[in-house]
Amino acid sequence: MVKNKMMEKLNSNTHFTLMAFGFMFRDLFIPRKKVLKEAGIKTGFRVLDYGCGPGGYILPLSEMVEKKGFVYALDIHPMAIAKVNRLISKRNLENVQTIRSGCQTGLQDNAVDLVLLYDTYHALESPGAVLKEIHRILKPEGMLSFSDHHMQKEEIIKAITDTGLFRHCHQGNKTVTFIKVTENNSL
Image 1 (spheres, rainbow, N blue to C red):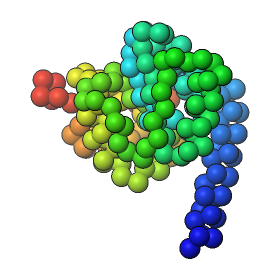
Image 2 (image 1 turned 60 degrees about the horizontal axis):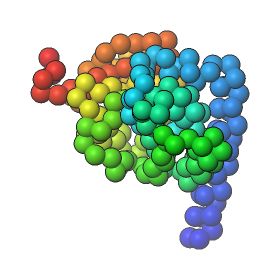
Image 3 (image 1 turned 120 degrees about the vertical axis):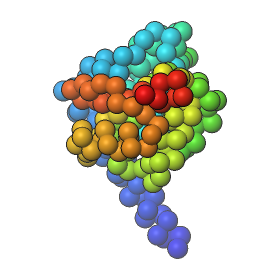
């Protein structure tokens, strides 16, 4: 039993290390700021990067929301949180906080303007519970910016809108944006 848990952790850490290395190359060819422009981020926004991984979006997010805004970086993997915490410390990012979780954010209701769910949905253990949590923490008119290279755009739109929690808003080159459904905008 202990040996299996050790192998599972080793495989998970190896996978994370390889993924982080691959993302470094990806970011050279497609800068994260270019992808983030599709999300409509504004100064002062409170943003949650759900499944932040090694933190490729964190620095550009921090710069885009400026000191008036705030960035939450959530991931279930301890190596992801450690890597983002090192980035926070190295760059003295006062407007970024990490959250280690697989679903619950610990944030208040209606606290966030935008949630990024990039290349995470396909790996979620409970996607419905995660979408409910995202809906709960988004402000009215809050947005979900979604991208997952494991899914086609039509499949993404159907999966998210079929929950009744979000309405399709617009499509960019790399992302699909949804708006939180509330009683006032449910049409």
